[in-house]
Amino acid sequence: MPFLVGSRCGDCGTRAFPARTVCPRCARPRPEPSPLGSRGRLYSWTTVHVSSSRPTPYDIGYVDLSDPEGVGVRVLAPLLAHPGGGWQVDQPVELAQDPDSPAGWAFADSRRTGTVR
Image 1: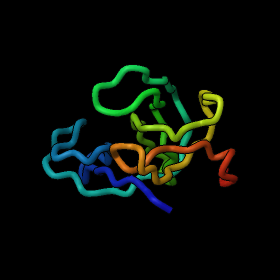
Image 2 (image 1 turned 30 degrees about the vertical axis):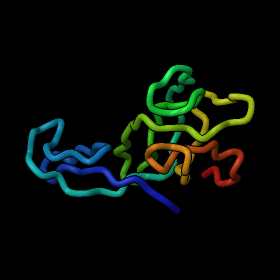
Image 3 (image 1 turned 120 degrees about the horizontal axis):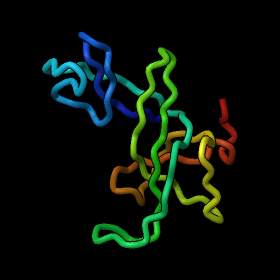
Image 4 (image 1 turned 60 degrees about the horizontal axis):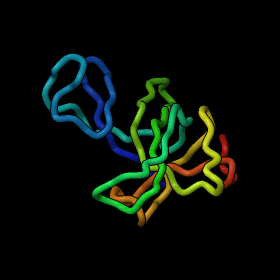
């Protein structure tokens, strides 16, 4: 299963995505690379109708990643096309490969892929 890699501060434990060169909380230089969860819950979303860099419309949203240590990270991420635009706040999502996304990845509706946990 794919996963995102962010950073984790060795002093205060703050996690961030994308990876940072300085901790956003305590300003310690060179936080360590840290794997982040590949599952989470959709915090909020919107459909983009005007873009100068990619075809529209497309969906983006904030995803609160699940973390076994209880220290989650909220990421702004592309969302895979959802038939009928049926995104809902707090629905489970999981990371998936998406060749149409500039990043090469996006979050998909876990309820449709059958891997809700």
